[in-house]
Image 1 (cartoon, rainbow, N blue to C red):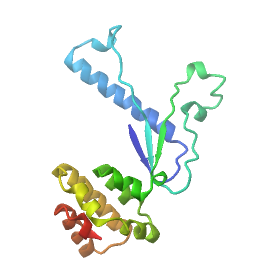
Image 2: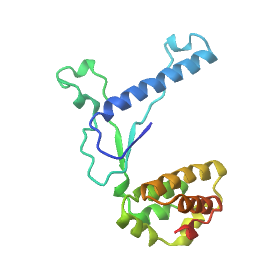
Image 3: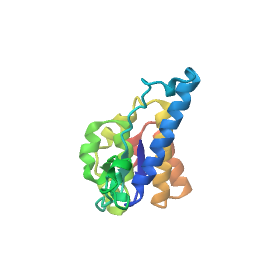
Length: 181
């Protein structure tokens, strides 16, 4: 389970708990469709969920990561309070070079997401253009569509014109990332 945040959110643990319950309810319904009554058997188990917060902000993540900390009297009533700890993947803990060296589409999207101001854009532009193009060379169309969406979002974030946005998107679709910037 991955929840995206651009700012520190002190209520994210409650949000993650709700999502986890929704996932388990959907899982139960699917298993019940396959075999009626299965969820009421002794051996039925729900799948584990690893809650992750993907955080793009530049400031440190300061929200408590343990759910119980969000509940008043959590330690005194710990026996009756659900508890879990979520992981935080802080985008700005990774250098541009480290992300680029991974050479995959997710790292490319993370590189785009790091661009939040002119300085970030300047740092991105220093990356080897051929390496950017190599990432998308054999990328399936469905993933290219996701990268196009991220590119459109990035263009909006940096106030690119409609024409500039169209050109950027066409470079992604042509798999010419190196020529994009």
